[in-house]
Image (cartoon, rainbow, N blue to C red):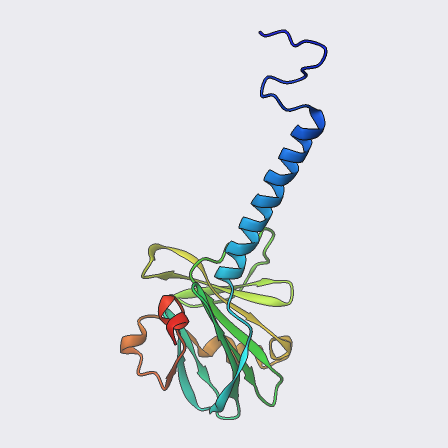
Length: 187
């Protein structure tokens, strides 16, 4: 072990305050990198559609979709590299459907509240998470969709859950599709 003299207090040549500054800069850089990654992953700000998408309609994302009821309409859409989101309004309140390919499962999620042979839905506070196998994860159910909004707090929730589907949109006969990824950014 090297013995340090009275003026040198580290092997790397940095004194205590310089080392703290270096660590602070490293932490700030890591925080900025994480923030940039999260911003890139999240859908961009919701934008109003030129004309709302009126139900009834079959709505598609990359790996899933949902049935827009006759009395509902999509008013906003947002997308990014890893996710797309739509805002639905209707007589039972509004809700948001967001599909993404990189969602992490939060700790402490509630029990399963709805189940089909293809997917299951778990509650996380005031929102719901849809888990399903996908083309990029065929052997395990992953968090694919987030559902949130006032319509989910009412009796209408079951109808929304029953309208969710997971599968290949190419075979789903979609009325309207919302994508994400590098193609979305080119639009």
